[in-house]
Structure formats: structure tokens, C-alpha cells
Length: 228
Ligand SMILES: [Zn+2]
Image (tube, rainbow, N blue to C red; front, side, top):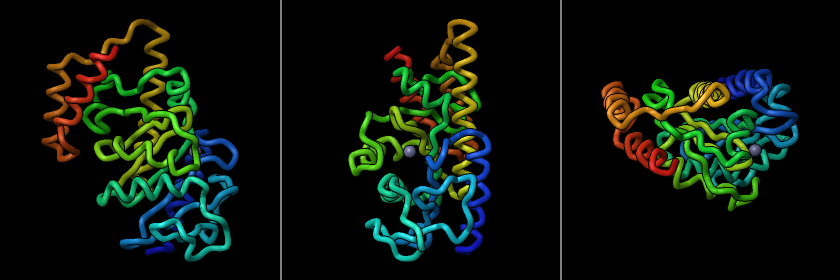
């Protein structure tokens, strides 16, 4: 089981790096090992060059239990997410350039524009800014990750979560793809968010497919519409 998880992290790490969703040794991936242990990528090694033995096991306070390397400097972020979400078994943190560009420009990604994203991810909120790799940098995600599987950390990067490493990764791909679509749409003209009626239908679809609560999506699309 643990070896399988290590191999899955190696595979996903290569894809994250190959797709340009991180640069150099940025980004980190983790998976829950039982109730209070977490398998996490090491600091200072590119996600594109990881080997299964490079991973580190830490406990819920961030103490290293096994592994030759130092755990990722962003381990506090991972622990904050696991503490908030008992249903989450894996986390991918990356620096996707287009989605990141939106947060650097102070532009929200959460405006509800892309129907399939509204129905699946809900929307993609952006946290307050906080210094990366600090406890403060980890705590800014808490209120957002409770209701969302994909969150942008302002001027930093993405956090996507799931039942498996692959699941968390596919949400990262989706998030960056959404940012790319929005960027092109804005270059071509004015982008209209979906109407409240259409959002309500997608919220219903989301609920009937068992993806997540529809009310959350409706509420936050409404909020982002009013702030535009
Ligand atoms: Zn980072």
C-alpha cells in the first residue's frame, strides 16, 4: 500500500513537472498513511526527478518519522488541509503559471463561467496573501478548503485535493485549463458569468451526480457575481 502510494506520487510528480505546472523544485505532493501519518515529497528535489525512496513520512505535528530527506518546506499547508478535511486522502500543491497569473493580477478565478467546472469543482476561490512555508501561509487555506477541492493561494500557487493522488492531480489540470480558457476568452472579449438560473441547474446536476453540495456553488457564484 505505502509502496504503491510512493510510486503513484512519482508518476504524478513527473506529469506535474512535464506539463510545466511547477518550476525547478517547486511544488509538493502528499498522501495520507492511516490516521495520523502523512507521506510527503522531500524539499529540494524536482517533482520531475523523484524516486519512490525519496519520500518522507511525517506525523500530524510535522515531525519526521522516516526518510533520508527533509520534508517539503510546505508540509504545514498539507497538514492544515488534512486537519480540515477528513475525507481527503491526497494533496497536490503546484505553481500553475496561468492560474497563478490571475492571482498576481488580483483577478478571481471563481467567477462562474465554465459550466463543467461549476458542476464538478464548484468554483475556485483565492485565499488572502500570506508568506509561503510559514504557519500563517498554511492557515490561510483553512476556511476555503472546507468547501472546495481546488483553491488558489494568492501570489503563490494551487492546492487541489482528492481521494487519490491522481484525483487531486486531475483537479489541478482542470484548474489550469480553466484559467487558460478564461484568459483566452478575456483576450477575445467581455466574459459573461453564467446566469443565476443556469448556475442553479448546474448546482442541481452536481448534487444529483453525488459530486458535492449544490448550495455551496450557488452561494459562491452569487457572491462573485455581486463583487464584479
Ligand atoms: Zn509553493
